[in-house]
Image (cartoon, rainbow, N blue to C red; front, side, top):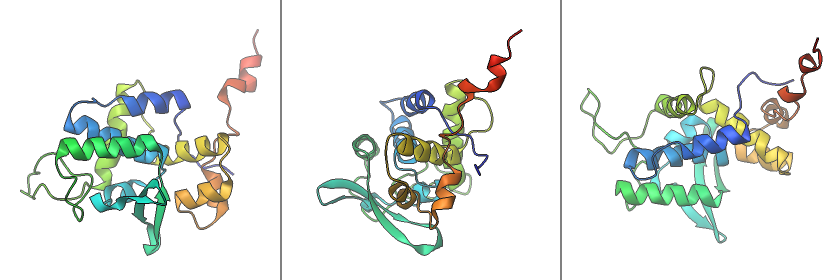
Amino acid sequence: EQGTTLAFSKAQANKLLNAPAPDTVEGLRDRAILSVGLQVGFRRAEIASLSVGDLHQNRGYDSLRVARKGGRHDALAIHPQTAQRLRAYLEKAGHGEDIDGPMFRPLRRNRKGQEFRRYMDPDAIDRVVRKYARMIGLDRGYSAHSMRATFITTALENGAQLEDVQKAAGHRDPSTTKLYDRRGYNPEKAASFFATY
């Protein structure tokens, strides 16, 4: 069995990670969001609920604490590029010392006049992914969930153990993790390409 969520190719994921501007608060925030999704595999709600203090050192490795679905909590070592992008964003945004505050924040007030010190909505994480997917030439169908499918497939392709990927994805059952694995889908080897007349 395989899920229906679209995954990015490695080349597309690389383009997506580098699509946001590297010199604006919005661009740095979006680079960090995409990195947490593509290189750590968090759900959009998990990304949206991160606090500044969730970025920490654990046994010499940069790590993120995460509140999982069902109320469970984990702390996971993260890719060095993700840690660098998180720190660059926090420095430019100026709220890196607000340990209890939200890591990812909207950049302006909304119509309701809410304060700046609020968490991004999970739907906003989807909008970030879709914005940059369009920017690199991908049309409909991609979402924040696509980052999880890409993370799981890439980690497994590169030799990570299923149990480790399952823990990183926050799945209780390995069969759920396997649903996201796109290693068996090789469109470049489709039989249709060999039916040339």
